Image 1: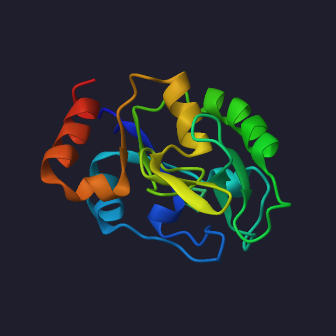
Image 2: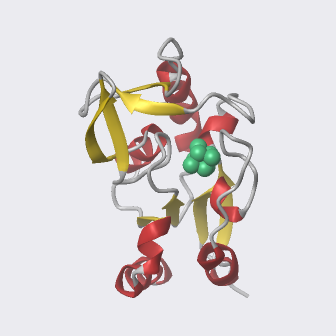
Length: 166
Ligand code: SF4
C-alpha cells in the first residue's frame, strides 16, 4: 500500500501543549480529517530551538522586511539568532515533506497573518513568522496553508489537491 503524503504541522495544532503559556491549540480538521489522509509530522520551532514550556512570549519587531524576534513583555529578550540557527538546521531535515500546515499569527509559524510591532505599535498584521519564512525561502513550491484558511472550503480543497496530485 502506498504511504500517505508527509505533511508538516505546527505542533500546537495537534493538541500538544507546546505554546508559550503551556497550552495547545487543537484543530479538529487537522487532527481528524487531514490526519486520515496525510502522515502528519509535528514541528514546534520554539520548543525545538530550546526555548522550553512555558516560556516568555515573543513577537516580531523592529522592521517589516527583516523583523527580529523579541520578548512581548520584555524587550531585552531577543531570540532572533537562536531561531535562525535552528531554522538553518531544521529546514534540511524537512526536505521530504509534501506540504505544511502553519499556526496563524505566530511570530515563528504564521504564514501571512503575523503582526509586527515597532515602538509598541502594530505596523503590519500580515507578515510571516521566522520559521515559516525560512520554509518559504527553502521550498517555494511546497503547498502550505495556515490553520484558519482550512476553514475555507475552496482553500482547503486546493491545499489537499496540491498534495495529492504531486
Ligand atoms: S505556533 Fe509554532 S512555535 Fe508556537 S507553539 Fe505552535 S508550533 Fe510552537
